Length: 264
Image (cartoon, rainbow, N blue to C red; front, side, top):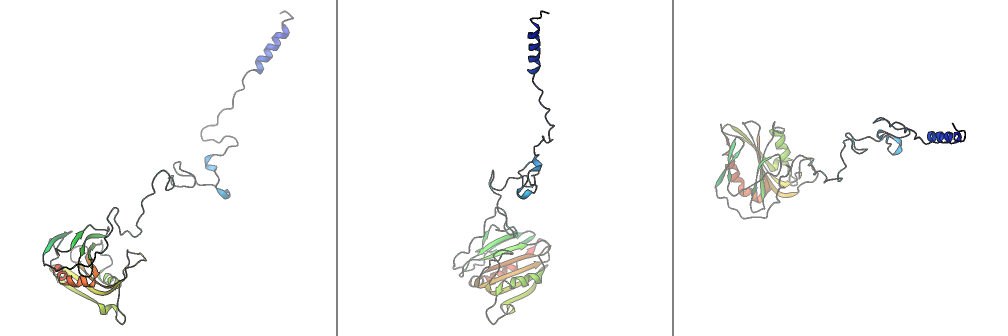
């Protein structure tokens, strides 16, 4: 080789070595931590505690993987802690004003499960406003509207005596009198059925809803109630309202009870 070209060849050779790219370090396998980096599960909550990670990829701190209420949609509908209202059912209507009503004696035949009963025509049937109600009627009258509600509970809901005691306890007697003074309990047989009846008048102080602290406070109220046994679980009829209204309908109530029967 020409000695004059030797320095040039050496220089070109060195330049080629220095100009090669250095290989990048291999990427860490998926799921491995890169050196010096924190994995998602190592996120720290304030105070140094490890923040819980959501199941299924949710946000830290939410163990169910769901966004907090109000993020990305409407909040869930409120629930009823007492179980008394049916989802989507209409709320119970407010009692109407006094109405002059004269019972005609005409009736409407109704069917309640295996029972049949004849109800005064003037009573206004409505859509049950609670999931525990089988049926309900507005009972009009001169003291303002009353209400008849029919219930049926699997297993009987505590027995006859316990329910009678509870219903009487929804009234406060006037000063100097007791609950026994203002209430009448009776028992009679209609066909194959046994009827336990209650008639009580006083200040009505029942809870607005089962378990609620808020209560009615209605003076001069009356309750006509019956527990009917003899065909499966007992059937409960409970009419409440101003005494002036239920006084008008007390004879028709007694007549109605005599029409209750089963398919048997």
